[in-house]
Amino acid sequence: MHTPSASELLQTWERGAESSAAARGLRLLDTSCEDLDMASLLALPLGRRDALLLDLRKRLFGRWMHGVACCPACGATAEVDLDVDSLRQEDQAGAGTPDADDISIRVLHVSGHDEPIRFRLPDSRDLLAMQASEDAAGARRLLLQRCVPDTGGAPLTDDMQFALARAMADADPQTDLALAFTCPDCRNQWEPMFDMARFLWQELHAWALRLLRDVDTLARSYHWSEADILAMSPRRRQAYLEQCVS
Ligand SMILES: [Zn+2]
Image 1 (tube, rainbow, N blue to C red):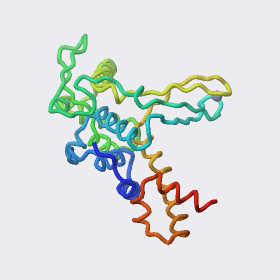
Image 2 (image 1 turned 180 degrees about the vertical axis):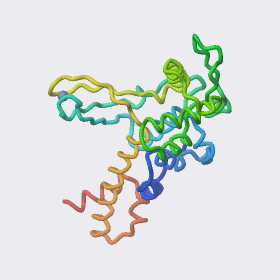
Image 3 (image 1 turned 45 degrees about the vertical axis):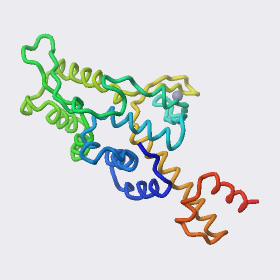
Protein backbone atom coordinates (compact mmCIF):
# COMPACT_ATOMS: atom_id res chain seq x y z
CA MET A 1 0.00 0.00 0.00
CA HIS A 2 1.23 3.47 -0.76
CA THR A 3 0.34 6.64 1.14
CA PRO A 4 -1.44 8.97 -1.29
CA SER A 5 -0.11 12.53 -1.62
CA ALA A 6 -2.25 15.50 -0.58
CA SER A 7 -2.93 16.18 -4.25
CA GLU A 8 -4.01 12.58 -4.95
CA LEU A 9 -6.26 12.53 -1.91
CA LEU A 10 -7.88 15.80 -2.83
CA GLN A 11 -8.57 14.43 -6.31
CA THR A 12 -10.13 11.29 -4.79
CA TRP A 13 -12.33 13.43 -2.57
CA GLU A 14 -13.40 15.61 -5.48
CA ARG A 15 -14.22 12.70 -7.79
CA GLY A 16 -16.17 10.85 -5.10
CA ALA A 17 -18.36 13.80 -4.15
CA GLU A 18 -21.48 12.32 -5.78
CA SER A 19 -20.63 8.67 -5.11
CA SER A 20 -22.15 6.15 -2.73
CA ALA A 21 -20.29 4.90 0.35
CA ALA A 22 -19.46 1.67 -1.48
CA ALA A 23 -18.01 3.54 -4.47
CA ARG A 24 -16.08 5.87 -2.17
CA GLY A 25 -14.51 2.89 -0.40
CA LEU A 26 -13.33 1.65 -3.79
CA ARG A 27 -11.94 5.07 -4.72
CA LEU A 28 -9.95 5.25 -1.49
CA LEU A 29 -8.38 1.85 -2.08
CA ASP A 30 -7.79 2.54 -5.76
CA THR A 31 -5.71 5.56 -4.70
CA SER A 32 -3.57 3.57 -2.28
CA CYS A 33 -3.44 -0.12 -3.31
CA GLU A 34 -1.31 0.00 -6.41
CA ASP A 35 -0.94 -3.79 -6.50
CA LEU A 36 -4.70 -4.40 -6.84
CA ASP A 37 -6.61 -3.48 -10.00
CA MET A 38 -10.26 -2.40 -9.88
CA ALA A 39 -11.57 -5.89 -10.66
CA SER A 40 -9.65 -7.26 -7.66
CA LEU A 41 -10.85 -4.43 -5.40
CA LEU A 42 -14.46 -5.03 -6.45
CA ALA A 43 -14.16 -8.72 -5.61
CA LEU A 44 -12.54 -8.25 -2.19
CA PRO A 45 -14.74 -9.64 0.59
CA LEU A 46 -15.96 -6.67 2.59
CA GLY A 47 -13.94 -7.56 5.65
CA ARG A 48 -10.77 -7.55 3.58
CA ARG A 49 -11.78 -4.24 2.09
CA ASP A 50 -12.30 -2.82 5.57
CA ALA A 51 -8.96 -4.18 6.81
CA LEU A 52 -7.26 -2.30 3.96
CA LEU A 53 -9.27 0.84 4.75
CA LEU A 54 -8.09 0.60 8.37
CA ASP A 55 -4.50 0.38 7.13
CA LEU A 56 -5.05 3.41 4.94
CA ARG A 57 -6.69 5.32 7.78
CA LYS A 58 -3.68 4.73 10.00
CA ARG A 59 -1.35 5.97 7.27
CA LEU A 60 -3.39 9.09 6.60
CA PHE A 61 -4.59 10.21 10.00
CA GLY A 62 -2.82 8.08 12.60
CA ARG A 63 -3.82 5.44 15.06
CA TRP A 64 -6.58 7.14 17.04
CA MET A 65 -10.04 7.70 15.62
CA HIS A 66 -12.77 9.81 17.15
CA GLY A 67 -16.32 8.47 16.90
CA VAL A 68 -19.46 10.52 17.54
CA ALA A 69 -23.00 9.15 17.74
CA CYS A 70 -26.42 10.34 18.81
CA CYS A 71 -27.90 8.52 21.83
CA PRO A 72 -31.01 6.62 20.62
CA ALA A 73 -32.64 7.05 24.07
CA CYS A 74 -32.26 10.78 24.78
CA GLY A 75 -30.62 12.31 21.70
CA ALA A 76 -27.47 13.49 23.51
CA THR A 77 -24.14 13.36 21.69
CA ALA A 78 -21.82 10.55 22.77
CA GLU A 79 -18.17 10.28 21.83
CA VAL A 80 -15.62 7.51 21.85
CA ASP A 81 -11.92 7.31 21.01
CA LEU A 82 -10.95 4.24 19.04
CA ASP A 83 -7.60 2.64 18.45
CA VAL A 84 -7.36 1.52 14.81
CA ASP A 85 -5.44 -1.57 15.88
CA SER A 86 -8.16 -2.60 18.35
CA LEU A 87 -10.67 -2.70 15.50
CA ARG A 88 -8.60 -5.16 13.54
CA GLN A 89 -10.07 -8.66 13.61
CA GLU A 90 -8.13 -11.82 13.03
CA ASP A 91 -9.30 -13.51 9.86
CA GLN A 92 -8.68 -16.90 8.41
CA ALA A 93 -6.15 -16.03 5.74
CA GLY A 94 -4.26 -13.00 7.07
CA ALA A 95 -5.31 -9.37 7.00
CA GLY A 96 -5.47 -7.48 3.78
CA THR A 97 -4.00 -10.06 1.46
CA PRO A 98 -6.57 -11.28 -1.01
CA ASP A 99 -6.14 -14.75 -2.41
CA ALA A 100 -8.12 -17.04 -4.65
CA ASP A 101 -9.76 -18.65 -1.65
CA ASP A 102 -11.63 -15.46 -0.79
CA ILE A 103 -13.90 -15.60 -3.77
CA SER A 104 -14.46 -19.33 -3.65
CA ILE A 105 -17.83 -20.84 -2.91
CA ARG A 106 -18.20 -22.00 0.69
CA VAL A 107 -20.48 -24.75 1.94
CA LEU A 108 -22.67 -24.49 5.03
CA HIS A 109 -24.55 -27.37 6.63
CA VAL A 110 -27.60 -26.30 8.63
CA SER A 111 -29.04 -28.77 11.11
CA GLY A 112 -32.49 -29.98 10.09
CA HIS A 113 -31.82 -29.35 6.38
CA ASP A 114 -30.56 -32.07 4.08
CA GLU A 115 -29.12 -29.83 1.39
CA PRO A 116 -26.06 -27.77 2.30
CA ILE A 117 -26.07 -24.07 1.40
CA ARG A 118 -23.42 -22.96 -1.06
CA PHE A 119 -22.51 -19.30 -0.69
CA ARG A 120 -19.80 -16.72 -1.27
CA LEU A 121 -18.86 -13.73 0.86
CA PRO A 122 -20.40 -10.32 0.02
CA ASP A 123 -18.13 -7.83 -1.75
CA SER A 124 -18.29 -4.33 -3.25
CA ARG A 125 -20.04 -5.59 -6.38
CA ASP A 126 -22.92 -6.64 -4.16
CA LEU A 127 -23.01 -3.30 -2.34
CA LEU A 128 -23.15 -1.44 -5.64
CA ALA A 129 -25.94 -3.72 -6.93
CA MET A 130 -27.93 -3.28 -3.71
CA GLN A 131 -28.02 0.49 -4.18
CA ALA A 132 -30.81 0.00 -6.73
CA SER A 133 -33.04 -1.67 -4.12
CA GLU A 134 -35.94 0.38 -2.87
CA ASP A 135 -35.81 -0.75 0.75
CA ALA A 136 -33.79 -2.81 3.22
CA ALA A 137 -35.86 -5.94 2.63
CA GLY A 138 -35.29 -5.71 -1.12
CA ALA A 139 -31.56 -5.16 -0.62
CA ARG A 140 -31.38 -8.19 1.66
CA ARG A 141 -33.25 -10.33 -0.89
CA LEU A 142 -30.91 -9.24 -3.65
CA LEU A 143 -27.83 -9.95 -1.54
CA LEU A 144 -29.05 -13.48 -0.86
CA GLN A 145 -29.78 -14.07 -4.53
CA ARG A 146 -26.29 -12.93 -5.45
CA CYS A 147 -24.33 -14.68 -2.70
CA VAL A 148 -26.41 -17.87 -2.52
CA PRO A 149 -26.91 -18.59 -6.21
CA ASP A 150 -28.21 -22.17 -5.94
CA THR A 151 -31.59 -21.25 -4.50
CA GLY A 152 -32.75 -19.75 -7.78
CA GLY A 153 -34.32 -16.92 -5.84
CA ALA A 154 -36.34 -19.22 -3.55
CA PRO A 155 -36.53 -17.75 -0.04
CA LEU A 156 -34.30 -19.26 2.65
CA THR A 157 -35.96 -20.16 5.92
CA ASP A 158 -35.27 -17.96 8.94
CA ASP A 159 -32.92 -20.50 10.53
CA MET A 160 -31.01 -20.84 7.25
CA GLN A 161 -30.65 -17.07 6.97
CA PHE A 162 -29.48 -16.86 10.57
CA ALA A 163 -26.93 -19.63 10.05
CA LEU A 164 -25.79 -18.02 6.82
CA ALA A 165 -25.29 -14.58 8.40
CA ARG A 166 -23.28 -16.20 11.16
CA ALA A 167 -21.16 -18.21 8.72
CA MET A 168 -20.44 -15.09 6.66
CA ALA A 169 -19.44 -13.13 9.78
CA ASP A 170 -17.22 -15.99 10.99
CA ALA A 171 -15.50 -16.22 7.61
CA ASP A 172 -15.02 -12.46 7.26
CA PRO A 173 -15.12 -11.06 10.82
CA GLN A 174 -13.85 -7.59 9.92
CA THR A 175 -17.28 -6.83 8.43
CA ASP A 176 -19.03 -7.33 11.74
CA LEU A 177 -17.78 -4.38 13.78
CA ALA A 178 -19.93 -2.62 16.33
CA LEU A 179 -18.70 0.23 18.53
CA ALA A 180 -19.54 0.46 22.23
CA PHE A 181 -21.03 3.83 23.18
CA THR A 182 -22.19 5.05 26.60
CA CYS A 183 -24.39 8.14 26.72
CA PRO A 184 -22.86 10.82 28.99
CA ASP A 185 -26.33 12.04 30.00
CA CYS A 186 -28.58 9.01 30.52
CA ARG A 187 -25.88 6.27 30.69
CA ASN A 188 -27.64 4.31 27.96
CA GLN A 189 -25.29 1.82 26.33
CA TRP A 190 -25.61 0.76 22.69
CA GLU A 191 -23.48 -0.64 19.89
CA PRO A 192 -24.13 0.86 16.45
CA MET A 193 -22.64 -0.97 13.48
CA PHE A 194 -19.46 0.62 12.17
CA ASP A 195 -19.08 1.34 8.44
CA MET A 196 -15.39 1.89 7.82
CA ALA A 197 -15.80 3.25 4.29
CA ARG A 198 -18.35 5.83 5.42
CA PHE A 199 -16.29 6.81 8.46
CA LEU A 200 -13.04 7.28 6.54
CA TRP A 201 -14.82 9.30 3.86
CA GLN A 202 -16.22 11.66 6.50
CA GLU A 203 -12.69 12.14 7.83
CA LEU A 204 -11.38 12.72 4.32
CA HIS A 205 -14.12 15.30 3.71
CA ALA A 206 -13.22 17.24 6.88
CA TRP A 207 -9.51 17.02 5.99
CA ALA A 208 -10.13 18.28 2.44
CA LEU A 209 -12.10 21.30 3.66
CA ARG A 210 -9.36 22.19 6.16
CA LEU A 211 -6.67 21.79 3.53
CA LEU A 212 -8.49 23.96 0.98
CA ARG A 213 -8.96 26.65 3.60
CA ASP A 214 -5.21 26.53 4.29
CA VAL A 215 -4.44 26.69 0.57
CA ASP A 216 -6.72 29.70 0.32
CA THR A 217 -4.91 31.45 3.19
CA LEU A 218 -1.44 30.77 1.78
CA ALA A 219 -2.37 31.64 -1.79
CA ARG A 220 -3.75 34.99 -0.64
CA SER A 221 -0.63 35.78 1.38
CA TYR A 222 2.14 34.46 -0.83
CA HIS A 223 0.47 34.15 -4.26
CA TRP A 224 1.71 30.57 -4.63
CA SER A 225 -0.17 28.15 -6.86
CA GLU A 226 -2.40 25.43 -5.42
CA ALA A 227 -0.06 22.76 -6.83
CA ASP A 228 2.97 24.33 -5.10
CA ILE A 229 1.15 24.58 -1.78
CA LEU A 230 -0.12 20.98 -1.97
CA ALA A 231 3.38 19.74 -2.80
CA MET A 232 4.71 21.09 0.52
CA SER A 233 5.00 18.82 3.54
CA PRO A 234 2.23 19.37 6.11
CA ARG A 235 4.88 20.65 8.52
CA ARG A 236 6.13 23.31 6.15
CA ARG A 237 2.60 24.34 5.20
CA GLN A 238 1.75 24.71 8.87
CA ALA A 239 4.87 26.80 9.52
CA TYR A 240 3.89 29.24 6.75
CA LEU A 241 0.32 29.35 8.05
CA GLU A 242 1.60 30.38 11.44
CA GLN A 243 3.48 33.26 9.77
CA CYS A 244 0.23 34.38 8.15
CA VAL A 245 -1.67 34.73 11.39
CA SER A 246 1.13 36.18 13.48
ZN1 LIG B 1 -28.77 9.24 26.37
